[in-house]
Image 1 (tube, rainbow, N blue to C red):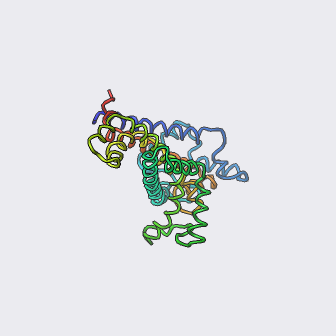
Image 2 (image 1 turned 90 degrees about the horizontal axis):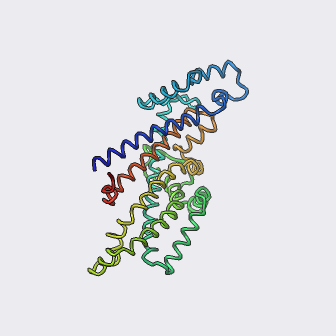
Image 3 (image 1 turned 120 degrees about the vertical axis):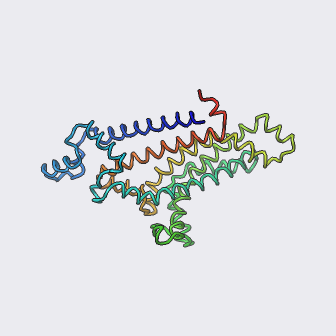
Length: 316
């Protein structure tokens, strides 16, 4: 197990390093003048030159990359041009909203998807299976921002149960903050739950054909116990794969949903940074999202070995 973890950790570090190279090349070496873009088309050449010098764009690319990478390692992410504030402070402040939102959305996704997928698989080719998979197909086709607007109209405008937007802050009102995240989390979770429910159903149906399932039933184990104790665990490898990808999609999906609900999270920060041409914030936030995706996939690989020992045993 230790060797397996070391191999995966080495892969994680190399992938993170590769991500920094890709992000740097995409935003720093593409054609165009970043300083001119940030200052606007009407800026004087002297102002553009001063901004280029401030950003270090007058230095060689390799030196700029080394300076940026060194700053990342020591926590110096640079200064935001639009906010006149350290980028790291802005990101930490916004992650306090985005991470709980993504975790809440992932929790709702998992609960809804596992319940629907297991029920559909245990009622294969019956009315419950057909109905749930039809709803899942509809959920896949619905854009989350459109569903978010429907949730606002129903629960905020007509029923007036939940706020339509805004975020009071964890220090001000914890219960009110959770209520303000409920509708955005549900808007994010519906599409992902629909996808995961179909994957769960397919994986469980494949495992139900195995001999050990018939053996468990022959020993007197109830159908429900067989499903939840034995079938689900053996079907978890493809389910975990999709869950890891979905958590990354939830983090990226907050860019749209946070703007619909006017939430001051990481997604809204990226949107505002693009609108303000704040390339320093864009570069670091893009790298952060990429790093979160890579770390989540690393954790999924580790969970593979925990859930299915055959994955660990197959490693050289």
